[in-house]
Length: 545
Ligand SMILES: Cc1cc2nc3c(=O)[nH]c(=O)nc-3n(C[C@H](O)[C@H](O)[C@H](O)COP(=O)(O)OP(=O)(O)OC[C@H]3O[C@@H](n4cnc5c(N)ncnc54)[C@H](O)[C@@H]3O)c2cc1C
Image (cartoon, rainbow, N blue to C red; front, side, top):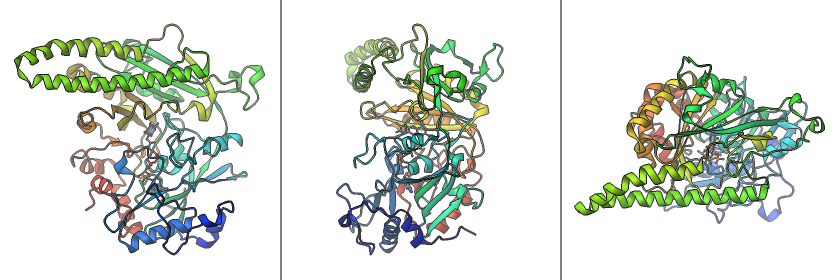
């Protein structure tokens, strides 16, 4: 049997917010108004239920946006039709947290951000009201965070997002979920009690609107680590399964490091790897004067400008470098377009292209890329900081300056050496069309029990393929080669990133990789009988007509 419907009235009292002015309290009879930004902003779970009931009455669709970090088609409805029916929801007034000191558990409303979202157009997201800072102040922590912490609690969980570690898992720390299903019923699911908990934990907004998440927390901790930039030949690990040298294989390496990710710039003339690794600090790691909890003299990680002592200068240098990076990639895109034009316009132009292309591809491009990833001159960058500042190492990247979109392939961690060798051969054989001009990120994730989580019951090796969003070519045509190349490894994909359109790599393939795929879909039929949570994207992904 599915879970018990809970007492809506009693529950709704729990989060009644006296500080919300009267005139902002919306009617619950179906007259909740659309915000000027095109979103509905419910303040209370009764209003979420009212919106769901309205979607059912109007045979419309309803979806929630978190911080909008997933690919856009995965987030919203397909847009309002002539009747103005589709309902897009933003939970920016659903951000409260409450603590259970006895159990060391925190319950966060679904719209609460893990950190601060710099792109939040409502202006609600601050460091102060972020889950991480509220936990840290209490002396608590989450086990793990992603490379950025801009996401909402719900958005991060529901797509199966994770940081780079096989030792810890945010998914494992979730103990209860509260949501409204597609019949307007509020339900509470608990780990170990309700089997459907494991369906809802990563459910892409297809089973209902998540209202609250309860996490098991742990004592706060600090993190220390290093980042090295080395040529491919000097890697700290081997890409072979059995190694003759004393290097561990890439799988062992990712298991041994507590938190780790590496970035590979595989272009000919560059071929460099940036390895970020870190671990929780133990008492022996603190100098005597900083031994007290929370009194660490931080040495923040810097993605760019690490050589600068002054924090403000380093920040300016980092922003300038990112702006330069964006302009560089715009120039590369324009140059490629010009070279293609030359090819199609007569012999003289073709000749010019033949002359200029190698200069561009083998001279200018690698020259500039090497400037972006300069080899370590002496010692690697060393950092130490509190957990919520150190783990999201890309928080300082300004997404608008270097807009990036991704596809992320998850394979069995044991297959990492084969995958790396295959990628290396692929890059060597196909050159720039395979390497692109950007970077590949590799990290690991711990196995978990969520039915359609890409890490369901297997530790995973993750290949995150980057694509500069302002490139003229489509991201799919570049990503497609990796979906095909890695198909023998029975991959699963990150749900918040690009997914294949073709059935043989999309629904037909993916359905084979998740043992609980059919169970998930029949639960979806039950919880959303009128299909109000579906949009075109998810219809295609799950082959639902
Ligand atoms: C710069 C950048 C860095 C990233 N780093 C990482 C990383 O390190 N690790 C990783 O695994 N991923 C990473 N991602 C992917 C990102 O974590 C996911 O896309 C995540 O879903 C984003 O969360 P969000 O709050 O933006 O949710 P959104 O993208 O807005 O929404 C995600 C999905 O959840 C649904 N949804 C949101 N809230 C609710 C709710 N309350 N109820 C029902 N459905 C809801 C949405 O409709 C959508 O389908 C990164 C993405 C970017 C752009």
